[in-house]
Image (cartoon, rainbow, N blue to C red; front, side, top):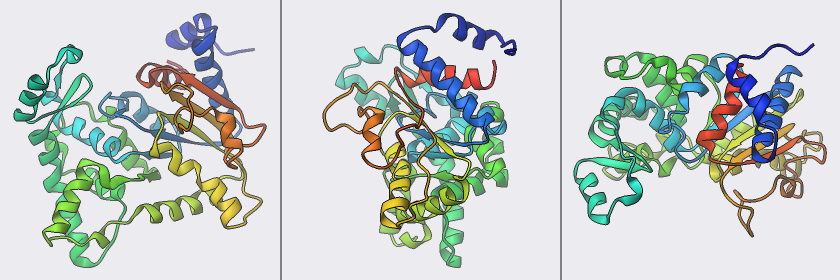
Length: 325
């Protein structure tokens, strides 16, 4: 007998019956089945999901062991923490489509960096966080220690130094939830984030050495070890958006299989991508899942789903199903 589901899940099950709506339900049910069978799940975050406050649900997904590893852009890594410490100073611009170049310049002069309909306050977000993270970069640099980008943020969050600034319920921060569980995270291409740029500026001034920061190659070698140790029962891949956050980690399987000749390496055991990228020629984000079979990432029988929708709409619905909201 099927269990009685709560309000949001019941609504989804009753009315999401066709096309992209049905894909949401199918993907959510398969995700749930994968967890029930003992598989682990990776979630990848592209775009500006942290600024979209995806943390309100993702933090609970982490606490309830619905996700076991995350791959994200440097922007998503830092912007969740920035939202935690400076949310009250964020500015929403619902009429952003009507802004002129002159209007955009005025936002820059006010120190408001726009992400679609939301402006991040530079001084209260970036600079407030910068001094605390820099202290940890500097201490590691001077002691000859090296850490990954997410580890420095974990240290900063767990130290309690940022609590004085909290402007949202800390339960809504996915980075804080991840730090408390020491959740594995990969951050490919971290250098192009704001904190990555700031770190580079300190290196240019000679205050820090690049060697204090572990690199993308080291993230890949670490991920290879993690996958080898966790894939016996299956590891699924839930991709939000496209780009490097997804393309980087999914490649670990063909690398293990083809380059390291570990032929027993299992394929990813589940795959779902939420993307508004249309199917197109040469596009990774717009490639249909079956293309990944030819690259040795997915198997013929891997459950595969693609939800062609705005991730800020579809991902919360999948998470709501998994959390039985």
